[in-house]
Image (tube, rainbow, N blue to C red):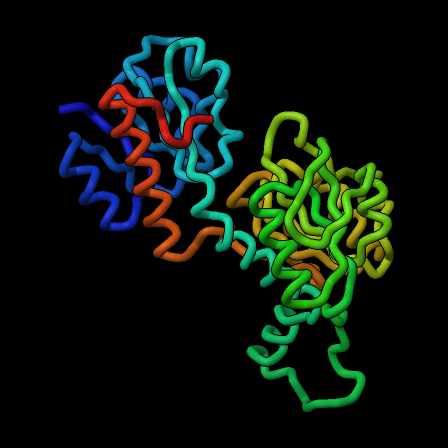
Length: 315
């Protein structure tokens, strides 16, 4: 029986399915594998089901390799050096499609919560500091009809765009490195600066790592309107976090909604202290049905590898 390492606890249905077929080890911790632990796992297991935070970087692939497949739990795989894996014969897959709607929903949650000051308002009520309704109390940003700019028009970007256009009558702009045709009313702009300057709300949905690391920097943020709202549902490393903090502290932009951070689970104190920032603990796919579907998709890729078939979601 092949040995399978699952690096985080998965939904019960996934664990039962895995144990029915493999000799399974499950790490009962929220912390990702270090580089040395990843290197040891590649030596000791036939298959690994990793996720965000597991350090399968280049140095992890330098020792003895027993593992044949890394079936990543999640659509983002910037924690895996795919080229290094390929060089030593380790296949890599991810879990696209099943995460699209759930992640887009969190994008809308952050748009609405940040614009309408929902986090701040809830804290006010919980602290028993709400002294009653008034015409000018807790005024936020009206969402309907505002222009939304999507950075990265892949599956998730398009799902956010549909919700914004059809649900909130929002004109949609998008920036994509390549030309993109989409089946909804949306206009592609030529540069990131164009998108940032023309949008009332900016939502980032690009993959993390590689050329996207730090793409939302001080220059990009400086192009935004002072009334602009910034939302990140991509990966933390896409944003220069220090530049974002500086822009918020200076009033250069009006607010931010963040589901991801550079050094998760660490969130800078400066962000935690600002009332105009909505912070979520990486809830993008946090629905049982979605997480179970992700786990099954990852297992399906492991089974395909085990049976000598192409990985359905190979990256």
